[in-house]
Length: 166
Figure 1 (tube, rainbow, N blue to C red):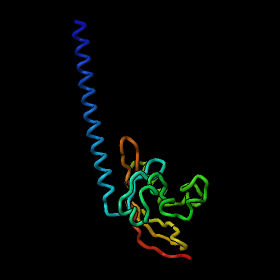
Figure 2: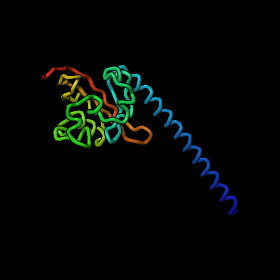
Figure 3: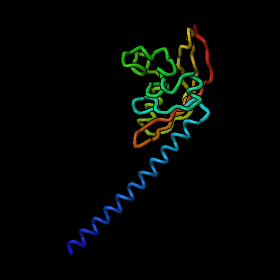
């Protein structure tokens, strides 16, 4: 009798384990497909991790920035988009004195912390393009997503206006 109970328990555990493996495979496949689909969207968009480092960028982002993926992956937005403040602190983008008011950074943090979607956030970002300083008027959309169990933010950025300021 005890052996039967033991075998039943082992059988139930095996079935549970098999079921969990199948769910994990489905989840991994869906997340991989989501990432692949995101990369091919024809817009400037990135996915950032909880440290605000870029983990995925659309081909349009790379094209607009004229940078290869190697110069984008693992970097923070200010470094990649050439924000004039990204070197204000030795900690990098997001830690300088002006960064507390950065609309892009604050939108990402809000999406991460509140686990919600933010749409149509208007903000400005001042960037350096060659020798020119340009103020970009942006419309930012951010959505909290989970990829492989890690919290991320999918960020879409539309440049509404660009004005040279020097």
